[in-house]
Length: 198
Image (tube, rainbow, N blue to C red; front, side, top):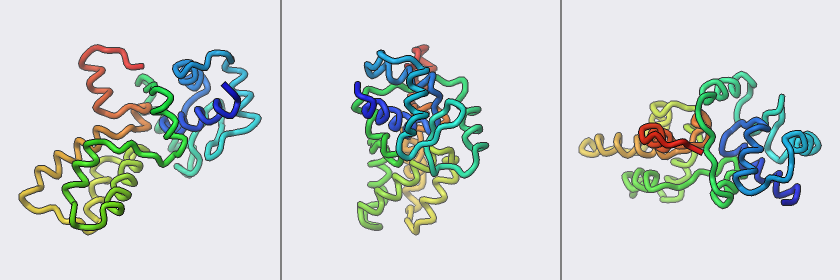
């Protein structure tokens, strides 16, 4: 792979995980087929030219403009420390080079359908994508749900249970920094089936 392709993969990894050490970046690169370089070479490449929208500190590559304080990244590292790394095929990983990319899931579509007719579809989708991004970055589901309800959307009394169920599925299908790129559902399924996550 060319250096620019490697930088792009690193940018995508930062977008998926929020923050990732060069050790894990080497795992990501090996998973997508790049095995020709050492960690030291990779760190040198990143130090020479930090990828767009990223920062590099103490061997960690992380998204720029997400948190104002390094302590917030340390909190993410602490909460994700014992979890496996989600390794995605290259075609699924690369969209995360846009650090605001949100994978549109059936659960997101189901939640959107609950509010159809209460705003333009594009506006509703953008709102749900922003809420998913907030959750990816560590906002509690309850706080994210409040943001959705604060958008002047109406949940009919008969739909309250469905809304709660839809929102739970939406949360559990969102890739999170604290889950090292996995969705909560993927981690739970892997744990209970005894499978080793990538």
